[in-house]
Image (cartoon, rainbow, N blue to C red; front, side, top):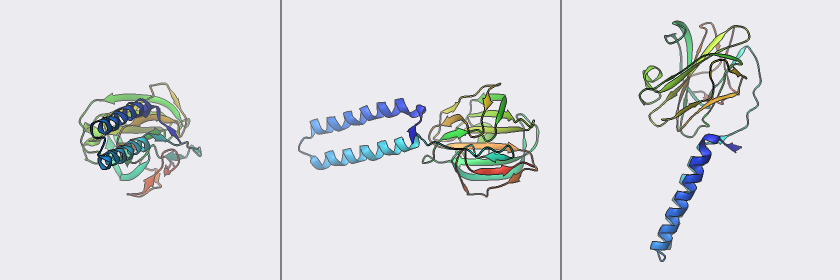
Length: 219
């Protein structure tokens, strides 16, 4: 287990701040050992909560060009046929995964291929499960074309707490299946749009692991 690069500076600064707070309490109230212990305990718990959010486990993806792999750790909240209006402008099968603050927040490519389209959208910060979050919230859209000519769209969506999306790809980049393409801080959602005849391999409320869980199979 390693710490993701997005969290290293924050964790270092937070450690200094918490150390400073605890030293100040000790200096101001040297006789109040109960208060000191409470502040120390609260500081340790808070730091560990932030630390676990930025964990980045090593993942070995079983590569298969017929499989769509989960792009995020979390819970499946949407499985439906819908019209994707930003790129395809036709009907697609949508699968959405919600990431809570306790999930790993590394985002991984569901397929291998070349990035054909990328766009960042500034926007609102509605709760990630809101029906309009995928079209009105801050988000990025990535389309990857596989070696078979299939195009898969996946979209990072910021939520009410997650207010910083990081996407590391640009058009023309080549992604490996299960390879890291982004990170979203403190809870959010990822939508995937597939051909309507794709065979869905997950159910609503099922837990997923980025880079490992097969969420759909291509015909």
